Length: 500
Image 1 (cartoon, rainbow, N blue to C red):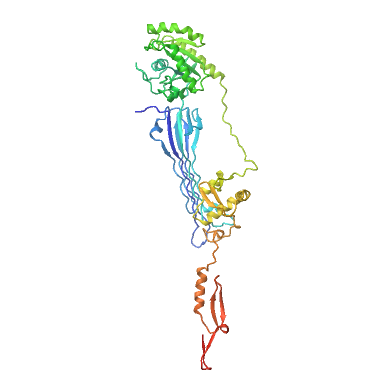
Image 2: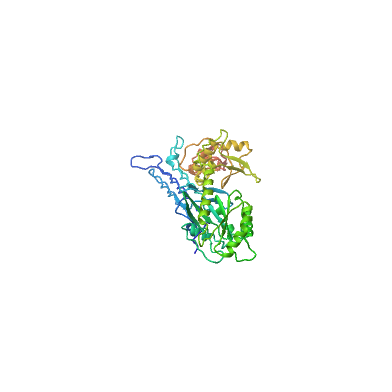
């Protein structure tokens, strides 16, 4: 069973905002009590926070799909919807949050560090909040804004002061076991260690952490062995320690060749050139190992390395080695720039910044981009004419119509905002109050007589007196025709006139 996970892909869904309510207050003896629709609640957000008690991303490995709760919908009597509950996810110190394309969103180092990775959607306003001098009783409400939906990659990079690198079975886990209270798995075969081990070492007044990187072999930086998977865990270290096996059973291997091979992989991985190095010749408790260590020590010293001959079995040389690491760590900490608290920078919007941009794509569609206008589109109920008219008024006040005209847009040209595409029609005057949910500016012109006009014409046709006839024009206007203009048929009897 997997017990250590240092990379996971999370599928996050923040909560959607609740819809606003369109309601009119009704009370006995108080007709037309005014709008009383409440606002929708905001959706829950998802926040990552560093917890020192977390050491792995194992929990997210088994539960990668995370969803925050939605906001409640508004109701009548000015009742607002409930706010969705925020989710707080605890992650280990050193977690890097990035997109699937590799863009780093946050580098979370230090207990208590927080990062809101997915924000909940805003709740829609009810008609009580939308009422104004012109729209006294709005017949619509705003829809809730959808919450953020995205996939992020969490990578754990151990926060350690010292990193141990070397070939499999060089004794890295044995060194951590005898120098600290860590209990890594130790056996006499390669690739015993399948996950990085972390231990805390006390040397005098200096306390530092030490970690090993398992599975380094030639080609590790390109994916061979386990090195590429775990090399990230030494990116934050201040000192690198080459653990060389002085008693390697393979005839073709020797400490100098091992050192060159590991250095080549570190160079291929990149970003570690400035770290000080220490070389440890391990397993000198074996006679052949001590002899080989004495042979290669002058060559390593000539290269500029500080060399220590140690034995994890007998603990020979470990005290001097531990204090040497403490000295280097203390020097690194002393020379490290003091980290200042993150300063909040407020950047006001420029005077000429309208908050949106308009571009015409290759298909001739005018594409409008902007956080505010795209949010308005998401919160508009396009099944309600009054809501559409309200959106048009907002876009006009923002200057969208003026900018479209400058770009050469004409009535009927396609316009796209977010996921909504429509034909642009310039705003036809100011809003005039009418039946709830309607906007007279959106009514299509129709020359066909209305139902009321056709009914009045039918009634008028039934009234036939001797003096006039009823006539209805195409526009629905009722007129009369005098009897004097009607044709008359005359019979042989001059005294009897018969109407034609």
